[in-house]
Every structure is written in C-alpha cells, then in structure tokens.
Image (cartoon, rainbow, N blue to C red; front, side, top):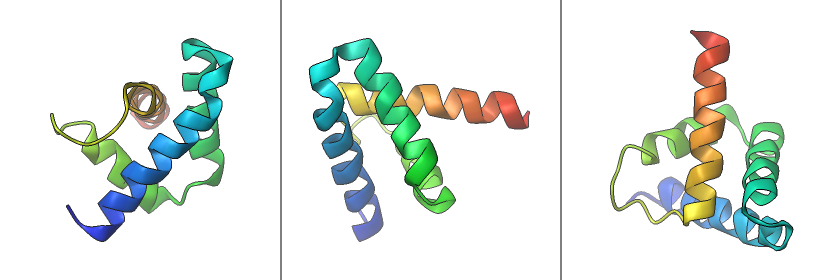
Length: 78
C-alpha cells in the first residue's frame, strides 16, 4: 500500500473512532461530513478507490461513511 493510501486509511479510521461515541448512524454521518468538508479531492478519490478492495484496512464505521459519501458524490455528478 502506498504512503498516501496508508495515510488515508489511518486518518479515516481516526476520524471515525473520534465520532464513534455518537452511535453508529450519527458517527458515520459525521465522519462523512468531516471528510467532505476537509479532505482534498485527491484524498477523497483515494479513499473511494479503497472501497473496491476487500482488504483495505478501513474500519466498518469509516467504510460506511466513505460508502455513503461516494454514493452522494456519484448522485451529484452523474
């Protein structure tokens, strides 16, 4: 895994872990919102690419947040 990919996984998991105290649904939404607001488009693209990989290192909460964000991005651009 490249250094950027490792960073994306680490940061997504940290963000999700920080919001986890809110409960699964709210934490996933808050994680997605944080990534949408603060991540560079290249970082988001890298994160979305990870979703296609079975063993990507993302926590379940981070994966759910990114999946939701990717679906929203696709709906708004497609």
